[in-house]
Image 1 (tube, rainbow, N blue to C red):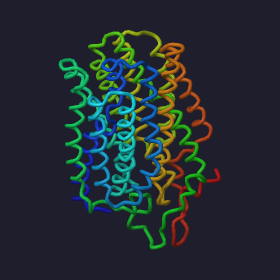
Image 2: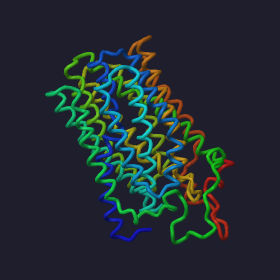
Image 3: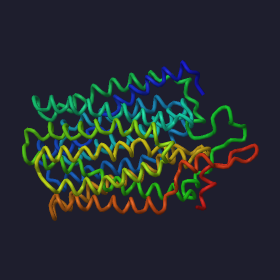
Image 4: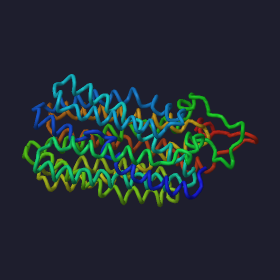
Length: 425
């Protein structure tokens, strides 16, 4: 593991990388729906389809991306290349705005962006170790949400003056800053074996080897968690784009600025909740925080149906900050719990985020179809019901992973992986 000086330099570089990558790793994100609706005059079903196609590209790339992060010792280079691909793909959209090029460019952007979550988590684990991992992930998410809030605020202000295409220029500026931040992380500070979930250096033996990939299928709690993650994003992913569409239909000129207000409101709330997870999750239990993130979504979906007033919609969006703030900070921690000492942390992250991506792809498609057939209120209620199902599964079938991580047995002379210890639960 790195010394204190390396850790301090790495901590500052990770803070900056998380701040600037916040805008880059999501590409155009929810602004894509507003841009296609107001500038290119696409209907909601077509928007949902192209966003789903792009997300499917991420599904295909996600698990291989996690395996790549496990295997490579050039994690900084991989992240830098991914940032370049996301940026170039998104900047091409105004030049080629027809359905085919948009689907291809956003598919490339999504496939490249899936590198960031496992790579950032792996670098964090490789530098700071298991004991400090929850706190570091909470800090990562704090800076990520702060970066999103700042970027959305700037986008909203300038979009009011110059139109929705300003988000493309902002993305380019953030990409340059993210590249500098990524390369500022000291390469020698990263313990690449620890980064994939093996023992800390002081307890590692020569017999420590990564578990077989079958651990992804034999660890039952990991499968339960992946199902819950899929349902979380099946519920969550389409909510903000639907709100943006409702706002844009009320006032085309204010659509992007109001979308930015929604994002800023949520991101500002995410900051303290990410900090809360980092500070308290190890004490209070990891499952409890994840369950809370699931339960927020049915409440949020129901509240959206009460009024079309822009101030109400932006206000309800604050609940997105609670749910997403908790989820972003606790998800990699739970995966690290379940994969501790297996050496398969990042490929497991990739598998879980694959489930997340499947949920997100189906979410936008489902929401678009329900909106066309039954209206926005029916879509919000449908999405909320999906999260309620996920909360029930979490409550009944997911064990407390913090206990699993703390209590994993170790065999003499080699690691007894945490996942194998609980696979039969």
